[in-house]
Image 1 (tube, each protein chain N blue to C red):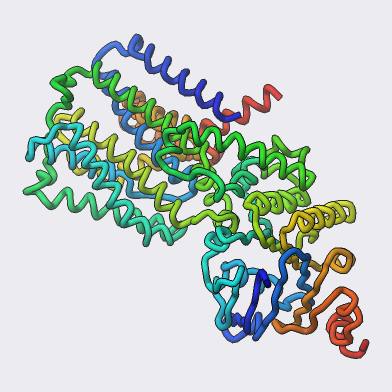
Image 2: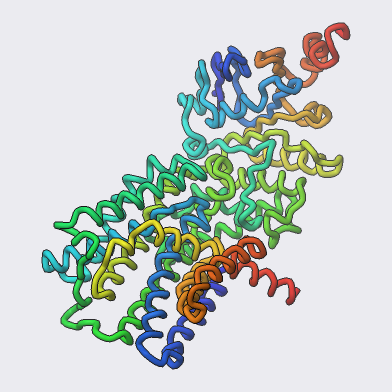
Length: 254
Length: 312
């Protein structure tokens, strides 16, 4: 069984083909990386998969169901979650509450029960708080348990987004440049978090520029160039692919 | 962590409401306190929309007015019991807000402000011109508020009714804020796309908070209609809407007690400033400008973080 199928996907922005005729499949329980030079369409692809953009052409199947052009919250209900390259943290809330929002789908969301704060809400929130704290420790943010999100450093916010996404208990987790802007230590920590997540059975897809990280943890790599598939395979296959080398190092290098 | 603070705040407020009458020498002061209370109920609801969910409405006096007129019309023209009229008004306003919210809350920022402004103006025009139902510019009387054979007659009784309603409104609002729904609302304010990817249907929550805040305004309006001898369209016009927003922003967005302080302060201030006669409006304007420049987060949050810093 495949978890995610992308079939002949295209996205056009006023004549520019950001993604063009792209097809690939993702198997459950593995770490996939999508790499490619700047402007290759990686983030556009993420936005298409997670419903933020609607594709011009093509289909997306998630767990064997057509989810093309479904809104992001509906995809979240089906078990897809993500982080963002440019942070989408709730800066008006505490770090812990950010992660608690990630539990949204697993909590009682009745308006009357909330207004009256019936026991179900208090009980659910207490459990949710514990779970959120556990996830913050899991991604290495125990120092920030009492912090406001707007007082946290960049590297911590990146991991906060991972914790928030994990709180939703997704089957598929998409990480858009989780190591961008991090120093070597931080990036190594994120690396470990991703491996731990994958070990728990969550399928991870990441866009990343840090080649050391990509080659180290990926089971499977998809290389994009100008919105099209350039190569696909294991890290070893991709590393030795002459097209990939040409795209990264310039035409003559191959 | 939140919960204790909220309950303490509510208890302190209850005590203040209980002892305040000792300092109210006559009916004039009672009237100021009661009007401040009505404004505060509306602002506590409006703050859920503006402060917590990060949306704007420049038309909430319209919902306040609709609640007031629903009560006045149903009680005077059709002889309904006031409490039923209040509930019917809240239902009508809730449904209207629900129907309007879907299309207009797709808008953001200035566009949303303009659309809600339009709603407020339309409601105000209807109240002014449909004279055979609403009494036109002269307004309409709702009669006294009575329930189960008991009628509210004195300012003193009104004071306790409004004080009690305000406490309930604050309790409800704070419960909502500290719940999964409330966190979803704050998340919408923080990052809509961030909220969507963990399953928050942002459009639905924006509609929900718009309806809740409109119903708060409607209930306050219904009671207000019974308190006044006569309700007029001026209580539902554009300036009243601006007044509500100003109170919320002045007191401090995303702070329920801030909205309360803003409403009380700006309701009482014009009364204090009457001694300055012609300069009243100028001084009021200067205070507003000063607040926005020096305390852009509003009164209560600014003072709050100042206190925390002192203690830390």
